[in-house]
Image (cartoon, rainbow, N blue to C red; front, top):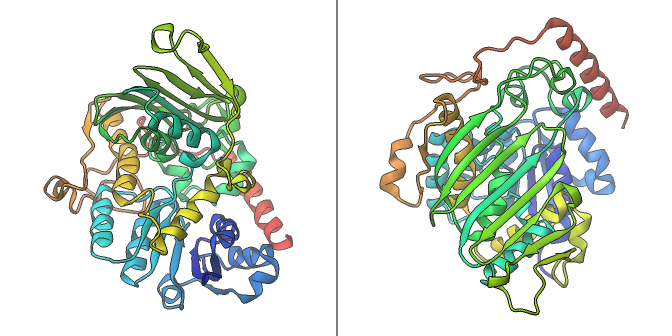
Length: 421
């Protein structure tokens, strides 16, 4: 029997859930870290008997002194890179949730930390591993779709006021001010993994804050929260339309891949169904023009369907464990993480400049990436920088007092439920 990989988790909410899945991949959770003792204790209770063996920390530096092999970074999305860099320097393997970093300067620091370490860095972007995206990857890599020409990917996740109160602690929380373009890897990740391409240029466009939509804001939102579009040119010349974390009334995902010999897609209409279409001049006479079917996970991986994000959480932990054991290279490495994440930051720069194109630098090129050293441009109200952007293309957005009061009531109800759960 293989030796268990001792795991520490930073971020007791999402992280504790992922740790339970990781146990099936050969990890043993031994330590938790969270700035909220309430969240840590809640996570330990949810883990049952396994929770009794876990040491909890509120200090991340003390947590890294604990004797374990690998860290799962699942804290606030805007704070992943500093935590990952510290863990690598502490000689820990790292699996980081998305986003990979928050500023382009952090991207450079993260890449250099990985290059200087002999530990594994794995980016836990899980959407490429849903059953439909895995099947699209298989079919595209077989060559039957031909050359990649055009792609679309959407991640649509509306939340009402009560859900906002569960996800967002208040107006200072990152979800309250993070520009809508930033959370883009759930869309770009599948396209990159299916086609093997990377973005080289991005144009960003944002729908301004909708003051009339009271159901979505939840009394804590200072951003343009409806939708954005990132138009990306890929390194093979293809064009990709990305919709990151939109709040349209159409919850779900969509991926469409157009080659010069065929098209594949799945949509919100039936997110278990894959459509493949080939025109008469791209197929044999006996082949049908349209094929609709429900893909299955590869043999031996049927249990993946029980995990979250369409099975993606199952595969990230397994690939991370395999990389630690030296069986494979990280399936999504730090350079791919930079490609997936940077389009959101650069796309917001573009949107603020009315859609002007921004170069997506390949961080494998040490000379090219140097332009971002010390680049701390960011919309965090508590984080100073030069030429500071506001979280909305409209400028400063004030939250009405009555909406904030209602949000605080809902948040108090949620925190009370954690104490009693």
